[in-house]
Length: 322
Image 1: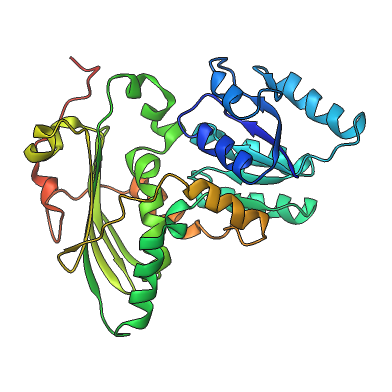
Image 2: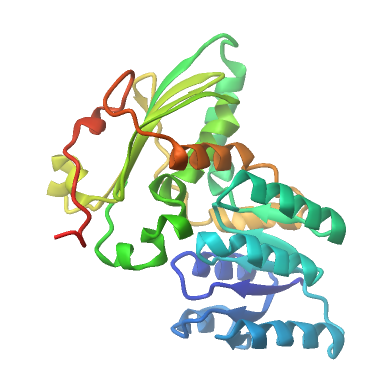
């Protein structure tokens, strides 16, 4: 049984980590979050100590190590994107490996600095890249690898996940903290595409606003038109008619990739692989981090060249700009 600590216990994704720790027969000894609405912990680890102040949490982790002679093996990190770097550093300096949600960091150079600390401490950094363990994605990777070596695939990626006004008040609506739309909701798709189709050779941004981001990516084995948005208004009418607020589609050569099922246990599978020493380490998401960093800093070109059809949808005002 390994000992875990969790930083960021009140967010949307934290319960998946608690469930994964529980289902891999390990123990959560302590959790930290500045918000105290974390009753979900009772469903998994009612005896875990909980803190709302980092200083008290830090002291408690040290006491476990020196007074109880108990080793902290892993720190799971589910905090806002801009804090990942600091919390990974904390984990490594406590003598633990870090398991961090995506995006691992916001900037490529953050990875280089973390590698120095990884080498200094001897501890490892793992990133949750759950699409890489999805059976349908694994099957696609194998199909591409076994297909014609000179084939360049045409892909359309569309991910629309409606968010309300709360989004803009939260850290997610602050580009300096979240990295913007492409980073916040798209980085795992870009990682998946990188994993399957190779190195990026071209990265063009057509639109990048508070509620949407779109562009064209060319990989060694694929040409990708992509569109991401949190605006309900851009949803297809047929999706709205069903009362749905999310639409996800990846078409490859005009054929839909079906991967909507099987998401429930992917964090547990990721943890199983990490515990076996097969997790995705610091370097794994580098190209995806580079892609979203470049998107964030590019000058959008508008509807020119090979663009996703949704690029033509009317732009929207920021909801706070009346």
